[in-house]
Image (cartoon, rainbow, N blue to C red; front, side):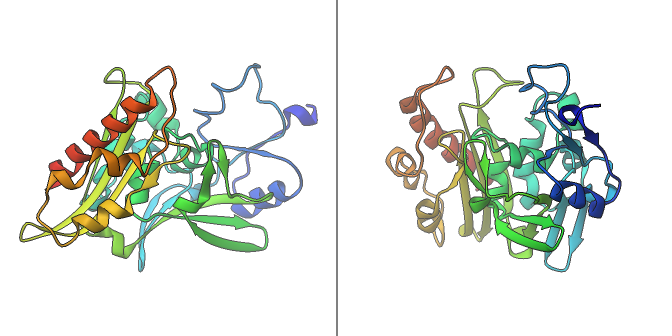
Length: 277
């Protein structure tokens, strides 16, 4: 086999990191994004398959929150017993392609692919998710909001591997929700999607985390809207088309134009929050 078609599937994380440090390897897991983008019968270039590493898959409760392994699948997330704060992520998992894709696709793969329309990103932003990154000699964490830097671009350095997504304990409060708008109900890339995590006490919003995806180069939180909601009984007029438009940067494409995305994202966000309150 030539170097161009070299394939490795280690069973230990340490071996995978050593391989990754040895050259320019393409990391793959479920391959639900990689194969559709491949024009040949074989994957191009040296390929490092991390699905053989058992320690990278699974959801664990820790002293400081939850740790979701990099190769945890969408089906794993759907079936997991998680706090209701994760309901937005569970709903997003149900929207990721068909069941076959949910069985294969992984959470870290969705993040590393860095599509502006990645379903997992908005609900993870509302959970204040952090990305755990390893290399042979170091481990680091960074906020998901800083990890995805643009369309198909991340903050990963050469020799680094995403090993988990961390959800802090403070973000386990409240109830999560997710909505997605597309040209049809199933198997669709979104025109806009929204996620929210709301905590209520006696009808008053005490915590609010809101995010919009598929309406800009990266999914984004809406801190100005969140600040206006906290301490108040919910008023849908707070989520105006104008304030949402100021937080996103949609494009015109074959699915929708920027104007429609601006208006629909605001309405979708209002409906998402109304469902929770």
